[in-house]
Length: 135
Image (tube, rainbow, N blue to C red; front, top):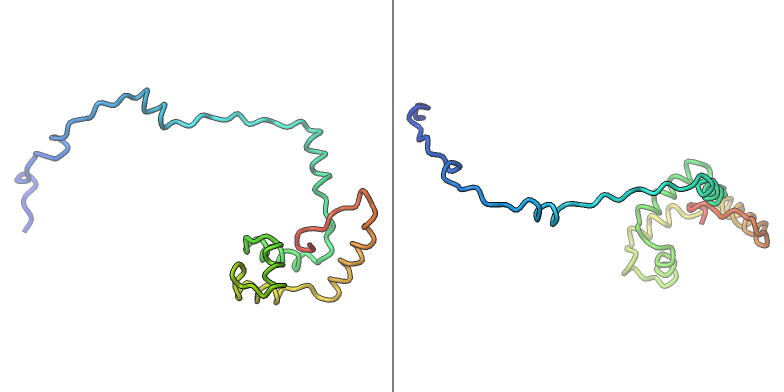
């Protein structure tokens, strides 16, 4: 059925193809990526930014994580969600997403904690912002 290896023609396609002339300098110029040197920030900047990122967490860890994952998975702006709910508009936010938001809505005790924090920090200049799930 199969020819003996010695009977197979030794003429391969690769033997017949001619190697193209390549200008490697032009090739490198067209397709290389220039390395960007990463700037190291001064330690003082890092300390200042870490202080600025401090947020108030009022939800328990499990609840906060669940809400945070839901919000990041939606890839929607809070204004779009608010508009969809207030105007019953399901063109931007589909009904399945609205259902998920409804099922993960804030509970009464959570809202009381959030309202209390907002009222107590309303006039304070150094008040820490709420974490994303609380927002």
